Image (cartoon, rainbow, N blue to C red; front, side):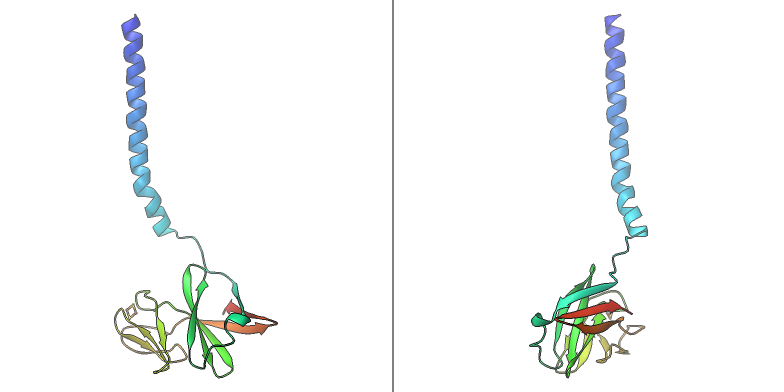
Length: 145
Ligand code: FES
């Protein structure tokens, strides 16, 4: 009788151990798959930048900022600013602004955008996503258009 109790207990323990291992194994595959198929929305409605950090920018220079989980780029043109999501419309590489050419450049596949973010050469199929820039007091407010 004691042996039976001991076997039953051991079997139950091993079943729970293997069952839990299988569950953990499946979860390690399913969780990333679900996150990939249904990514959380991470684009903000607006971003607030302190003007003091950007007022000394020279014309046709740029600074990066965080647009949620994506990079944003702020370009000074004369006395005004333009902002874009700095993600290439080809395969999502980060674009940079080249002041000497006054163009955005994507190094991944030689993609080019003009100073207004319009795709002009290379594989990018569409313009950069432009954001709305407004000055409010001592802040630069960047909104989704
Ligand atoms: S990802 Fe930018 S040109 Fe391909």
